[in-house]
Image (cartoon, rainbow, N blue to C red; front, top):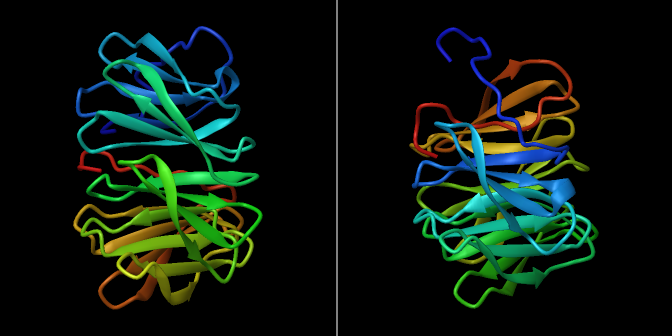
Amino acid sequence: MQTRKLSATIDLGKPLRPHRAEFGPDGLLYVTAELANAVDVIDPSTRKVLAEIPTGEPQSHMLVLSSDGRRAYTANVSAGSVSVLDLSKRNLVTTIPVAKSVQRISISPDGRRVFTHDQDAPRIAVIDTASNKVTNWIELPNVAYASEPTPDGRWLLAVSMVANKLFVVDLQTLKVVRALEAPERSSEILVRPDGGIAYVSGTGAGKIAVLDLLSWKMEPPIDLTPGVDGMVWVGAPH
């Protein structure tokens, strides 16, 4: 990151259409492999694929890890499901039916709840990670594409790509308490580790919105180019 130059590549061995990549507490890198219906486990020091964990469902697009590194959860877009993976045994625990189609996935800071987004109805599925079942639905004004909880576990921020809105959900009541303007075709949310700022990528607008989570007011956006989507933190805890 200091030189801003490509330093290495990781050869996955075959076309896999990788998407989300997350480092676990074990230092390994976990990457969704859509064409293999799997999650690849990679050693970043050797840049070698150590294992391929099947998700049991097609189009495993995004994933989240529990904070203890024991579980991974994937959102399987066309299957409309979530897969639960045991990362120590490197196997599939179960798949959870959610809807006809889902997009993206997030997890509460305490690891007790996973959230994924129905693409045919304006609602978010709330999955209890103890029972691996959908236990609640968060009703929204519009279909949501992605979400991210705040580090204190109080709020869930959800963006609607179709409505260009950001919804703030109270995670105690599971109700929407705010609806804010968001960039055109907003697709991703990143919350700063201290919980003070949220960043929202606008794929259509070509900019990142900056939301102050104390005042709930937008700061000047970061101008980029159309197509901006995924975001990650570098050099800071997730």
